[in-house]
Amino acid sequence: MLDLTERQRILQLPRLLGEIVGDQNEEITLLDNIEIIFDLGLRQDPLRLLQGLSRNKTVVAAWSGTIVEEFLTYAAPDHAEYRRYPIRDLLIVSSEGTI
Image 1 (cartoon, rainbow, N blue to C red):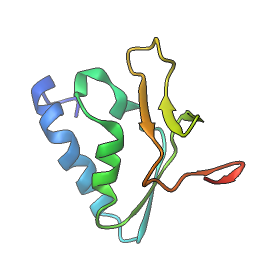
Image 2: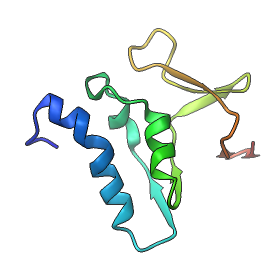
Image 3: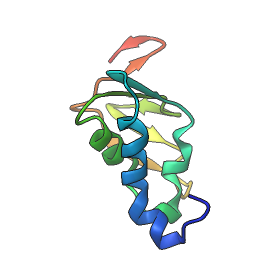
């Protein structure tokens, strides 16, 4: 992605991630260190992006966030990359068990 312009990155990120996940011959794809998809310059909805990847295969993503009052969060509320999603329709597995 370093060779792409900012606009190209915005447009190409979903396709590039789709190719990475699609090229795997496994039914389950594990994603870690996904912090880059939260970058404001990429103008993506990280959860929607991950959900799009999971349409054709199981995607397990290591989410660096917390669950607070039925919401999945990323970053602190005063941080520019802060995100907050209701946990409905998500299967969340944590060190405490499945939620």
